[in-house]
Image (cartoon, rainbow, N blue to C red):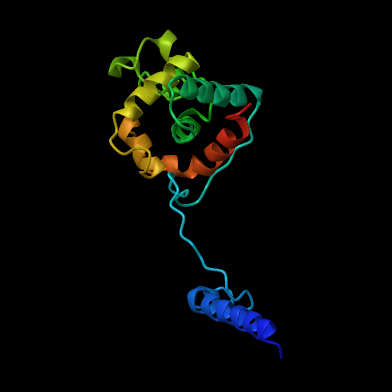
Length: 186
C-alpha cells in the first residue's frame, strides 16, 4: 500500500472511532428495532366526566340557548370550560329551556335557563329569563369559586347554584362538552 493511501485510511478509521466514542452511548439507545412506545401522562385542564352520563335530544330553541350561553361566555372572556360548566348546569336545571314561572310546579320563584331566583338576588324576572344576562350572572358566581377551572364540574356548579341535588350536574358533562366543541367556533 502506498503511504498516502494508508494515512488516508488511518484518518478515516480514527474519525470513525472518535465518532463512535462520542455518539456510541446515544446511538446505543436509538436502535429503532428495539424502540417501544412509551405512555406519557398528559394533564388536561378539565377533569373527565364523572359517573353515568345523561343525554337529551335538543330542539332548535334549546340549541339556540346553548349557543347563547357560549356567546355570553366568550363575551365574558372565559374559556370553554366555563361554557361546559354553564351548559351542564342549565341542562340539569331546565334542560336548556328558558323557563318562565311554572305556577305550583315551580321551585319557589326559580326562572330561566339556570332556575335563578329573583328573591335570592339573581335579578328581576325579566333579567333572569334573558339568556345572556342569566349566563353572565352564573359566570360571575363561577369566577368567585377558587379553582373552578380544575375542580369537578358538579362541585363548581353546586358552589354557584347551591342545589338540593349537588351531584346531579355531573350527568350532563359529556353532552355539555360535545355542545361546546360543536358550537364554540361557529
